[in-house]
Image (tube, rainbow, N blue to C red):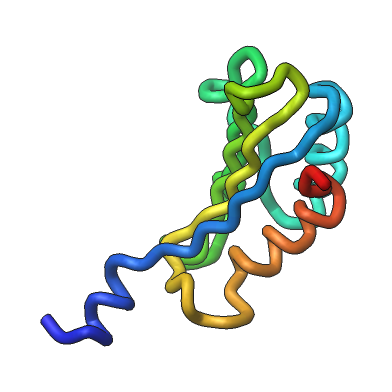
Length: 113
């Protein structure tokens, strides 16, 4: 398998940062953003301070453009969270759906300064 095929199959889009804010505020800001992006919180996997959001069941996009958002506590501080936005799209490709959603989420759940 050549390098181009490896890039297509193994390098997934992942955007990650640490944010510092109260859990309730973070969840409220995320909820405001989800409707615009076509994602929804999955109650089955969102327990305690962990939040898992994914494309809604009615999503018409191809499997590799489906985006997941995972927000979980950072072990070093009570009010710090690791925010991850990921999809199966190639990481090195510009303008992916994952990149657009990550930018939107990052604008409302700001990285720790």
